[in-house]
Amino acid sequence: MITTEQNEKLRGWFVGRLPDDLFESLAAVTVDREEITVVGRIPEPRLTEGASAGERAAAVEGRIQEFRERTREDRIEVAREAEHRFRKKVSWGVECGGERALFTHIAAPVMTRLRQPERQVLDTLIAAGVARSRSDALAWCVRLVQRHTDDWLTELRESLEHVQRVRAQGPDTTAGNDRAPTSPADEPTDEPTDE
Image (cartoon, rainbow, N blue to C red):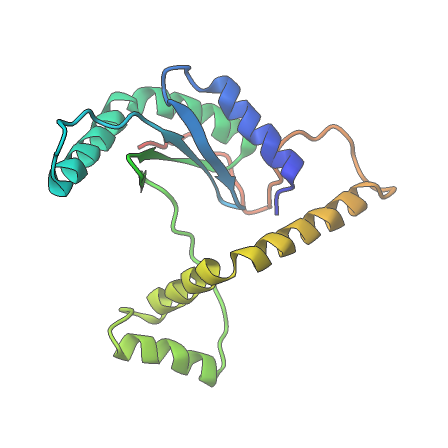
């Protein structure tokens, strides 16, 4: 888990490194063990007064696609630097007109062992047509928990940050590490990320 201070440094790096005209503003920089996701706000398309919801949705979709294509090279350049510095893949997204779109981003496999009652929950979701597979059903369950327990998860994350701060004050710590934490599974890559 990344601390608030590390997240602020990471966000600050992107604020300083991104071209000034890339986004109207930086909406979010989110990080986990595998990936950094950078989401920026872009201007809404100008529509005539009284435009229909369908026209508005199509215009927003077109604006997002135009932004993605036009800024690809700039985003790849920033991603390469960030991936080298932080040893994590960088993914991109935008907010436009109340819509959020993520471009190419990681779907990391997570292995788990489940007992029969837990497997039955997943199988019920499959039988009901909510999910196509156990993997899909498990991801659905995680999204459901995330949606309904934001306050609890926020409190838990804050508690974990406190534990990390206390550990950092211990006798076996090394000072001066301004990089986001990495795990042994993280490997540097030369492949560009966009996209």
